[in-house]
Length: 226
Ligand SMILES: *Cc1c(COP(=O)(O)O)cnc(C)c1O
Image (cartoon, rainbow, N blue to C red):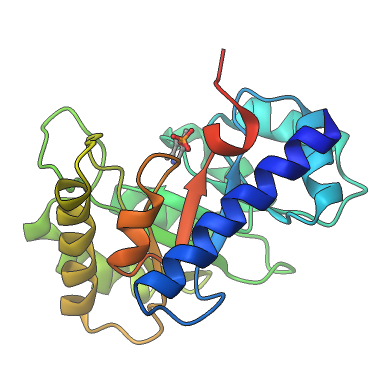
């Protein structure tokens, strides 16, 4: 099982490095975030033993349980799921990154609740790239004002944007929302933005072609979720 996870990890890293070369991205400019939601702490430990350090989780309690179990490992935890207002304190206290900030109020709470003895919390703003009313994320027309406001919050470090486009199989169609996200990030003109969190198991190459700096990969590393 450990060998299996290590092999998958090598395969995913190879896909990332190949896409970097193919689309003229600098070597190692794309970071791999291993999305371990629904998978046990033992699977995280196996991947950590292979050399993976960044892990992403969607459900707070599940994440806190794994962190406790794996406290001896030097891992960097990223929160990537929907955020309820009453859960911000634990997120501010326990994570290094939050990719799914989708309301100004959430950002204000995370900043206020980030402990002073920790570095600022790294933040990405989630964007509703497909403009679906049912989906999380900021709309294009509110993004600039919200980003300006969040960039001034003292205990946060605004790093960039995140999106989860609707699945598509055609490569050219996969690229469109990622290109859009990159353009919106460029238009913000905020100093220090260095992150485009985009691309998952089935579309990481398209995301890298359009400038992803971090891909969030679950299935290709851990197998199908139950
Ligand atoms: C589950 C999840 C992923 C990983 O998706 P895979 O298709 O399994 O690679 C990435 N990002 C977010 C926000 C997720 O919820």
